[in-house]
Length: 317
Image 1 (cartoon, one colour):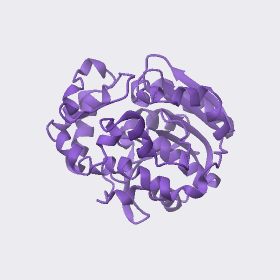
Image 2 (cartoon, one colour):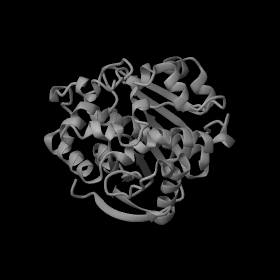
Image 3 (cartoon, rainbow, N blue to C red):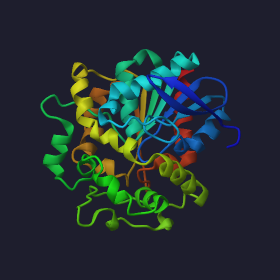
Image 4 (cartoon, one colour):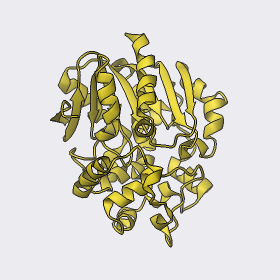
């Protein structure tokens, strides 16, 4: 880990913290919520040792990267713009993209906005978010899953932050990382996060050192930046209207755990396996469902995920 270099890059109006290691073709890793560049620590070490330059930023709102206060600053054009600016700053023309959770969503839109900058894509946990032009995504989720669904609870600025503040940060993160229930995540106001387990046996893949690192950064930055991704969901929908129906024409591999709550959201399984995914992503070459694995897949099964990435991207050199 001490070989990983840390720099600050000016991009798209913000200062972005970037971790990097190795030399060779570039892999850009994009993390999700509530995570950091550190979520890719295993992949950075593994793939840099196999001849790749691995780059993992703290995204806008996270860690040691700037966190604009307004949700309107977290739209997909902002998030992809940050990463394009990072590549420009580093003089990198093309990358292999790897995304997880919100990072996977950003990676899908990166491929739509700037396919010229991407050689191939490996996305984890979140399939392509097909844009429905008839209604805003948060309105659709609220209609189907109700006001207590976690993404709906995250919408009101300050409200969920107050609930988060009832726990020390390490405990809160353990609760979130331990999620293995395939049912939709509901956080009713009367109960909230108290209903989630706090059992470190559910996260044997996280050391105390790992949790302490995550907690130290969230103690400094807070959760507002990460939560603003959810609050900008409808804003992104409005701004991406011109791309309705556009296919992702990038060679793609998709990996998800069979205990990932995303896999069980309404319509997702049928979309992945029923032809819709392949229609939207015509160069989708492989879909892997890993048994007994939950949402934080690259940390829970680091060697397997590193191998999945390596075995796919090496064919495009």
